[in-house]
Image (cartoon, rainbow, N blue to C red; front, side):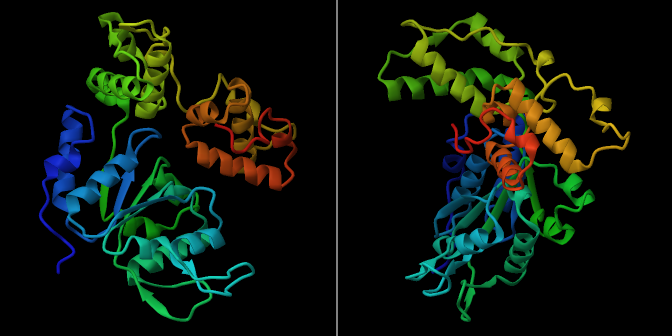
Amino acid sequence: MSAIKPVDTTAAFAPIVTSDRKMQSIFRYMEVIAPTTQPVLITGETGTGKELIARALHNASGRSGGFVSVNVAGLDDIMFSDTLFGHDRGSFTGADRVRKGLIETAAMGTLFLDEIGDLSSASQVKLLRLMQESEYYQLGSDRLKTSTARYVVATNCNLEKSLENGTFRSDLYYRLCSHHIHLPALRERKYDIPLLVDFFAQEAAEEMRRPLPLPSTDTIEELLKYGFPGNIRELKGLISQAVATSPPGTLFIPKLKPASLISPVVPSDINFRSLALPSGRMPTLNEAEEFLIKDALKVSAGNQRVAALRLGISRQALNKRLQRGIKGGTELFAVIPGAEELNDE
């Protein structure tokens, strides 16, 4: 029995609310590459819907297995190996039974690896070998297993810059981008905003069992002016909050800053010359990173989710950097309000 079956691609893309031409072009490309077994790289800013696109690609593929998703940000090499490959009984202290990995769970289906740009060097080597050979070993086992999963990966990082600074392997990069989907930011498809507002408002109203509030023309115009650094995820949260707090019949949204005033990457008005140390030397990348994270958390009152949006990274990626700083005893992180609350929402 074949692992691929004909599918209705219209149904596969139905969960994605859009009328944007760029998105329609992406759908056409996805239809072409969906039946292949080659890996797919999905890039785009945080909150643009990369996992939703990965799931649509799987649904359009006709693969007989399931869709399995894992966020690899913050996983050290042992955790990465155990999560993907699984382990044999007795392979380490506490391994009292065999545990199959996600590769086996995703057999004949799709394994989606999110935040691939944060993968450690050692884990990158293992992922490259897996994709090249389609073979792997469970931890503690000498029995070779075969992978039948199709790999889709995503990141909001600029992998080309990661290649330049040596944090991402070039051979893995070229292997991953056999097919590449780049998702536009919400501000680049702003005429989808009214459609998304209606969709999220109806969804939230049903969940809260409240009457469906309708947005005014002025509300839509305000949303069209806004930059949405958090993209669709931010819009969804905004509409959910509005449905919960609006008077009956009308969707009320607080006044937002226009797009020209939004800077999703630079956390505040930083004079980058001030990054130079008293000795006059330029700071290292690690020192500059700590400076930016500290500043982002200060202006975000310790809220990691908001700080991550300001830095243009995911909350998981920020969490990973904070953990690294605290474990390393970095004084800079020790004074950040809320930095010790690494699992805050």
